Image (cartoon, rainbow over all chains, first blue to last red; front, side, top):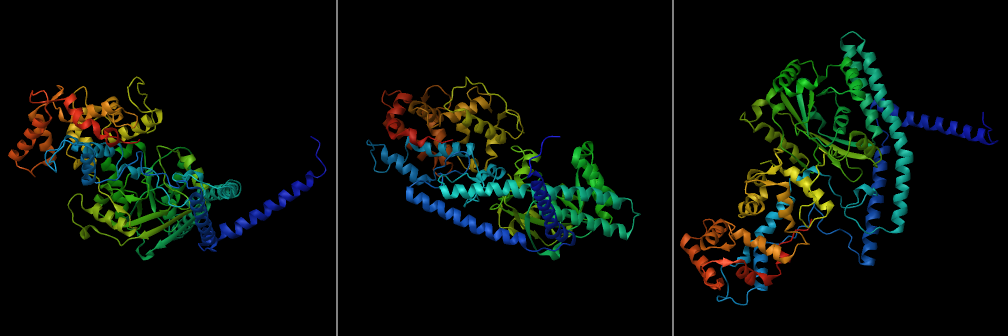
Length: 423
Length: 170
């Protein structure tokens, strides 16, 4: 036993009291509302305050940069090269003007240097183009006090640095532990809850409990990320026997959608913690988990999904047809597998506001754990979810390749993003 | 994803380490079938390139070993010619080789015609195009051999501050 200093017991007491208070606050303000699905509006207030601070910060930076005559925005930083936007006519005129003194005509029809424009444009495109930009994170117009999003801004004053430091302190020392505690609570409740519900005999009571256990745990997870979600057109929410398709920006999409509706998940069986969660969930209600070997077999996958949707008592399936995580500035072409099953399709569009935290998962840059930590140390995840009107097979042309285009266009229009077709 | 293949550092290019890393990521994104080299189709999968009349010529110029595809070394060496650090003669040689289709060091009447045809397509009649080609060669051909050598080319084009026009900053 080492010698305790006289005021150590005081510190221990204080610690104990503050922990209790914190825990009670947590319970009252976060977990209890999550259980019942109500909200105190604390997160919305938080969001408004943050917006004001960001606007102020950007104003300061612009003012400061003007005073010092610095360049605030790095020039042409879209992509890996600096593109000089000139047109064909301008450029050819310029080259010809600077060149020939020996012209016989006043306006030569052709100069050997005319190819320069095409060469350069071609090179620029080879090195960087619009489509590839979809796969890296979006850039912001105002700085949100996270150093990780500081691509464009070069000049930062002392006051701003202090504010940023304060932000770091709040995010890492206050918000992060809070969020980890909530996430832990949410996940363990999910596992325990679904396992317990699994022991009940099949019937309406089990369904009822399972639904509420799922919803409750997802709501806690949503609060663990401080996700502020606005739902639009909730009357179009997916019903039993349908397929829900959504655009995919990150694994969090699942949590966001599942906290507002009761879905059957589709996915590969994982090991580790994910595997535990998957096995527990499937006890309470029938999700569709595929073994790794089954995933390669398209027909098997289609068969299982078809069986699931044909059973009208089963929950709507949640599918992300883009195939991979896109950076949320546009909607890529949907892969057609999910549309061949022939059930009613409920399209959903999810749009994140990158002001508060960039939810895009660049899987070639960050692993899952790093990604989750980044999420939990951002200010918040703000997003909007649009439930689009359902579509049936009769509602679109049955030619191959048209159905998913229809749905994709609808999704893109809903969130007013680019609609980009792959060649 | 995430595997970084090592590249031979003897590749003569003007790029530093970071730029080569970015280019290699770009190369991997363009290489849709992961064959290790870029075919004409993979280049043409970029919508903006499809409108560029000189794509085939640029690919031919990159493809130094003549196998019809551009591997990573050819890609780096090729794009390096557009680097800010490249010298003027290198850029002029690049422009020259766009015209010089058979790589014999001279732009013949036929080669100039073919390249111009690629650029104007059907907007000019063949005889009008031939007139322009003939006129250009007459004006530029100093030693009277009916074709344009590199020296004659650079004499015309060389004073145009080429190094500003044929530059892409990575």
